[in-house]
Length: 404
Image (cartoon, rainbow, N blue to C red; front, side, top):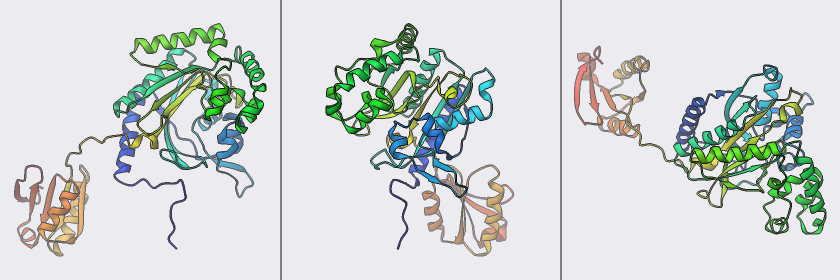
């Protein structure tokens, strides 16, 4: 019986892997221009980390985690998202005590046990950025501009939605108003919304079920219940985006899917992948560092779902590069093997280990998209030369091996 990849897990092979690396390389360059530096955290973490940060009311913790007891009796799970592990690392390495700004970017696989569909797999990849120690709304705008630059570079069309989720000063009062409203709808909401009413009522606003959306139309709005500071920050964010030519829509029901967000929340949505779907999103999580045992630290971040946009990326036209080395006789194989090792010090080399006809070698060199085909046969061995053809301008010549 043939063993296949697990459902929802996918191999990344060329040419898709070329796009994968192209995205990482260029998203990394853009993040570095904004002052972000690379961080990597383990794929496996204690389950408690995600229960405490993402929140037990979230679908991720409630339904989707790859959770198990390891051989040491530890309750662990594969990371379902990137932020919690980075916050854990930030605290563990005592960076929360340094009273300075840290900017990190990351990329890698995440795991959620959900129904696989287009752009949504059980093993998927994210590229994200997190800033710690900067509470200014300018950093909120900075994050949004960073995502905009990445999506613009890859020519991905999008619309931006923003909202404010309030802070510890204004959220408790709003939460009470919302719960009072929801209690009158108990028999008309879905099971998940009823459950969230007790655990994290604000998540009810995010329900995608059409009937729930209808019932929630008259629900109290977050933006009508912000304190003065949150209101001013949100107005400043809108002002900064307009000044920098960023179009946006205020979505009062945008709450994001994780419990740790406060104040600014945002999503970049694309209609190019079928139904309108978020390709990137994030927001502030000013209380998460403290909640996980660190010193109070303002923070903001985002993640881009890579699988969701890879199909939308058009690769630039590739130029021919490198040298293809081939042998016309068995005696020449040792010579080209040694040549290949020397030439690789400075350039890409493709080598064929078997002797072939000149026509077969040229066909293989063309397939490899090499710039040059360099071939050695018995005649070349005897004369200490090599036959070289420029595959772009079709010119060919015989030169000394030393010169080559």
